[in-house]
Every structure is written in structure tokens, then in C-alpha cells.
Image 1 (cartoon, rainbow, N blue to C red):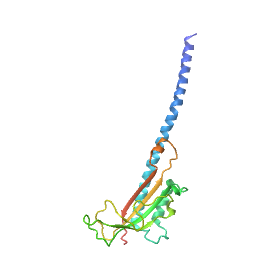
Image 2: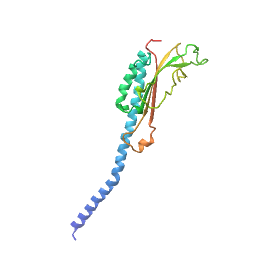
Image 3: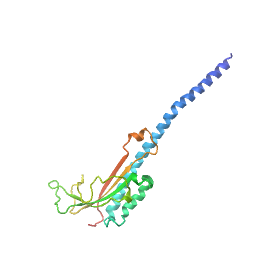
Length: 199
């Protein structure tokens, strides 16, 4: 047997070894890539929801388009819904819910913090199924409830606030170990003071 024969056998063995190593490593690499993609999707979804609540509360605070009978359309909520549909899922309304609440300082109770805390009442709430059918209720409160607004110290009499809440049941498109470890129930809210000048 010649030296060339032994070299040829060693080279062929190394090729086989590399193939076996690749067989073991490839699934782990794919799992890692899928995990990175899923984490990116989670972060992107949360940031979009946070942005939507801010924009929705901003819109309602400027024009108060929801200050109308419940049968009338609410343009601000329609705009939020339209912007949200591409990633919330237009065909699966049971996966998300958008709730608008109008909160007013109760004029019958003097507001003089810290001696007398301000009292707020939810004077209007749009909880229609046309804005998602996910089984969630407002974490701020329900219509006519007396609620608290943390961080709000001094307000004018009958001051109005507008709140947008978005609930989203995140269903990972790629089921990996990451998808099982995260909290799939997203919630975000933003409260803006009224700047429209309307009562």
C-alpha cells in the first residue's frame, strides 16, 4: 500500500466526519435562528401596539370623535383599527380587542390634592365587538365606574381624559421554545388629556 492510498482514506474519513457534525449542528442552528426571528416578532408587535395606543389616544384627545351616541361611528377608533389590522390579524378578531374610554373629573367632588384626591368617572366607553372580540374588559374600569388615574395630581374642574387600551393574544407563527416561554397576552394603554376645548 502506498502513501497516496493512506492519504486518500484519511481525507475521505474527514469528509464523513464533517457530514456527521453538520447533521448534529444544523437542527440546533435552525432552532436558534427561529428563536431569534420569534423574539424579533414579539418585540416588533409590542412596539406597534404601544405606538397605536399613543396615536389613538392622541387622536381622540384632539377631536373627541367618540363624544357621540354609541350608534355613531368613532373615526379615531376606526383609524386605530385600520392601522392595527395588518399585524393584529384582519381575519381573527378573537385574537385582539381595542377599547376607548372617556374619563371625566367628577365636578360634584372638589379636587384639592393631596387633601382631597380627585375623583374620576368613566363617562363613555366604546366596547363594541367591531373592534375585536377577544374576551377582555377594560383594566381602567367600566362605564360609570369611579376610577383612579395614577400620576395625575392637579386637574381643572370637569377635566376630560381619553384612554385607548389594546389587548392582543400573541400567537407565534413559529412555535419554538421561545414561544412557550413568553407571556402571550399583550396589553398596552395610553391616557391623554383633552386638548380639543370641548366640555
